[in-house]
Image (cartoon, rainbow over all chains, first blue to last red; front, top):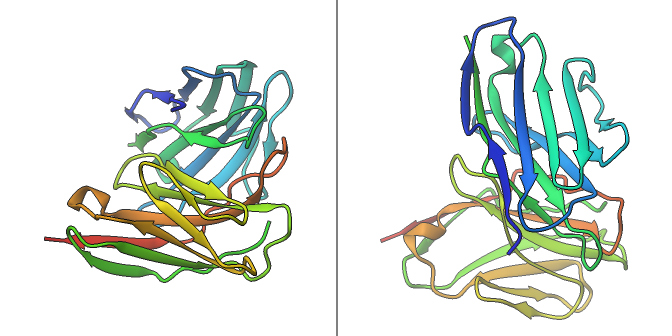
Length: 116
Length: 112
């Protein structure tokens, strides 16, 4: 099946620093990738949709200047949390959608971000 | 995309079939039913999807009612490793638009 990887799997950083998370589709090309955030005991919340070669589309209430998304190739999207604060601590999950067919979305394993 | 309704939790005995229901009464003709599951602290895993015919793969079976207003995911022989949150989502397939919006899902607890 389609495989999506994320790096790093967990990261701890100090308040005010920026953190970059990578999302890769390993065995397929993904024109569209998605970024989700999940707080403890809650469901996944879609943050933004990322299309290769164009600007990301952010969901309502998500600050585009705080969560920078780059989708420079068909297999790589990055999420940068800028000037992270403790309230940004969360589980960040990316997803990549196959092109053609049923356009199924496959998810990465997630990145646990802890901001001290 | 249409909204879905699932029971918040279910229990199942190990080795028995787990039947997870989902209501999607406002589903449109071009929307598929997708099922994903999330095991604790992992990313969601794709299970199966269907339009109107029943579907089966190595993981599960999907039964969709004739009016398409509800469906049931069946795990034929549940194991302890099937304990997870199961999400039923409807979305237009064969499209470059549309996105998966997650509800609260059903927490399935498989017990020995």
